[in-house]
Image (cartoon, rainbow, N blue to C red; front, side, top):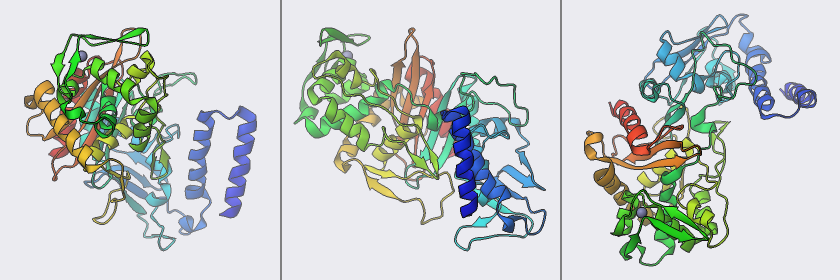
Length: 441
Ligand SMILES: [Zn+2]
């Protein structure tokens, strides 16, 4: 193994020198490094001369990918293949988050405890935490638009869905130009950091609840505009007098912009970091993209906008889903996994948010659904949610909808982001409903 690693390192260096250290090639090297170890360098796996078998199943036992006589096959169903492409990977190895590369040793039946491969000729079965039904529904609901849907179990940490579009059928891959900019190989649920818009208000809200005395009883006001730092934060209309829960339900930019200025950028950044929105998240060896929160100058217009999820703010869908799950789990942040958990696994918690803060935000997100989004649009679901319509230039907006189910039987948190999709609740809300209905079925 040591020689393999040395050789692999040397190859990496040659690649780096030859083609330049671009992210693309580093990602490709990382993929093929894993492939060599699992598929070609371990003699035990080939003792029988032809053992090249194994399969990946979803959490309900549905076969997603199987290897027979060294030949890998995806599901027979095109929708399943396309919806799960970014979770499984493509044949050419262009998708760095693909399980068929990342977990090749487990597919072959490698037992990390005993250090042996099961040589029964059938290889191993990798049970992923993904739910193919939920993934298919997410792909269908995105309906050709670019974006991502992430669904996690916030108690076990299992990822149920990390669907990304655009996608393609790995059994019939299209010609994709080397200079393609659609990001078709990227799993946007993990690897795309988007302007969050108003879903970020939960961070500013949490900071306000913990740092501004008696904020819950303060009389707040919106004229439709808020003058700050020589510029103006605007709302679609004057929201008038309100308490903080109505400011959230109305998604009032003026109030949250003013709260951001009162709190200061450093305080909000501290909370964004504490809630895991800025770091690269590691999920079974797969790294997500980092988020971003730039600390704008005191009293500036940029600071006000940063508190409402604009300015330079960036968040990945998976990190937003996890934060929502942290609120649903009374402030305990769970470590995420794509491997199906046993009863005692996947409960690696960290206290990210005060339980009292989580309890207050839970009530307010419940109120958001009842007051703004309409319980009738999410039948049978104990939904807590916040929408976001994040302006990304050219008058276009990313449509966000993120939240969780306050349901011990179905402790699921989610984030939906549709690129340039329009209004968050109107566009991403129905996608979230379809996905959650499939998840609780
Ligand atoms: Zn307002």
